[in-house]
Length: 363
Image (cartoon, rainbow, N blue to C red; front, top):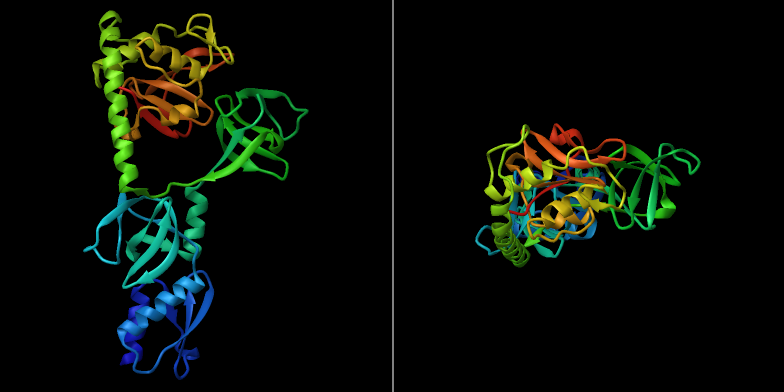
């Protein structure tokens, strides 16, 4: 009965299973999900406490690999292995961490700047975690040259698809030994690895202190932007456009009305003039400058301005960020943006014509 109880306990932990055929006197042969084997010594009269301690040692010494959160929104990270302990942070859906140990049905993990305990039912480990990590991680290429020429083929001899400034972060869609394929507004093109720095972005846990600081910063930025917009909004046209929406804030709709006046004007790489020519980030930057809001001239940097909202909660005036591109949401599943040199400033629908990396709200 004791051996049966051990089998059930370990299986319920979702971590090891016992192979009875290899279990000998005083020994239990365990297999970790992912094919990593371990063997621990247990007396025939081992208590549940003995089993938990042996299991924790096995996890710590045998598996210290990735774990990936599988939750709808987030799961609390606690200071100890039960719900009685204080919350020290949040592990968001598909965020990644490292397993440090196991105790009483809880994994001790480190993710970002947070170390604590998460119930084992909310994370996966082993080969499943490794597979998921590849899916939830985003391979990024950061431009390290003044002007990156994105080409149609994986060779420096092919035609130029588009130009990207230094510091921009682009989503990698394919990779060879010497080149990576990246996503830009003109399509997917190739760049030499010599001119980019490659990394993989993951979502990590957020500590209570980090969450509080982020929320305070977002609230301060929101109040400052609303104050700056108050005077500008009264002097801006509030008439609706053919693609606009009456939903959302008055300030957001004022941004839309102002931005839509420039549809049809030219796209110019590196430009900021709404009439004579601008690129995508220059367009968003100049529109918001009219309302007293200072934004960076970088589509990547705009992924951090204001505060984030979900795509399902998007409102007119929100900034929509893509790989190497950015636009302003005008309503009715449409953005206005400085697209390419061949199209200039235009409307595009649907918003998800390309993968959306972030939606940021200023007002």
